[in-house]
Length: 179
Ligand SMILES: CC(C)(COP(=O)(O)OP(=O)(O)OC[C@H]1O[C@@H](n2cnc3c(N)ncnc32)[C@H](O)[C@@H]1OP(=O)(O)O)[C@@H](O)C(=O)NCCC(=O)NCCS
Image (cartoon, rainbow, N blue to C red; front, side):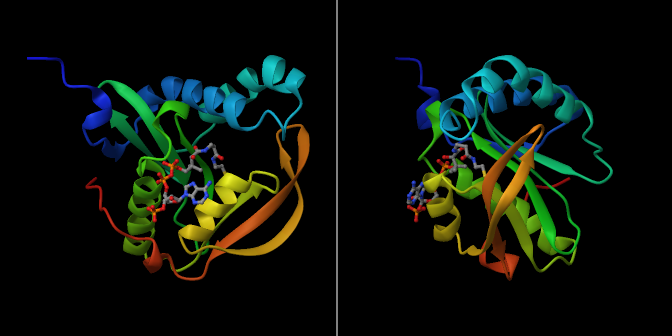
């Protein structure tokens, strides 16, 4: 008998609690350093980003914001942060570098969209870096349309960003995560 590799089991999607935030912040930092090295200055990623990301997680108000996470065994494999206003704002979506391309991003989006639908929300949007072609193709694959490209603040850095919009989150909704 061999140990079953984590990669072969399907990740669980669940609501994250504040006690999960420290490792989700660590996942976000690793994802930024892997995926955003062209979009953000290296000095910012190295020196300031750890503080900004930690502070951002510390300020999340779970009365207004929902966080779903994917867990593969004991490891955090991804997360999505969003609200259920109309239109819903998706603040953050990251899959750990070693877990990308396996459907976790799609499942997180579907689970978030299902919760938006349950709250009566119809539309959703997010901002993605305009030069992050992988994520733009991912969002287009999931039915989003480009609305505009503008400079968008990422903490202290202004980055040309694409506003991606879903006119109906029903096109995304799938997996439902119980409270
Ligand atoms: C973007 C990201 C969230 C996507 O998550 P993922 O788990 O890698 O994507 P999935 O495996 O769920 O892919 C879902 C679908 O999008 C497609 N897709 C993913 N990346 C793609 C790409 N670069 N080009 C075209 N299609 C792509 C997949 O083929 C898949 O389609 P299918 O289900 O019809 O086969 C993830 O790669 C990530 O965290 N990237 C770095 C951080 C980032 O850019 N986050 C977004 C911030 S706005």
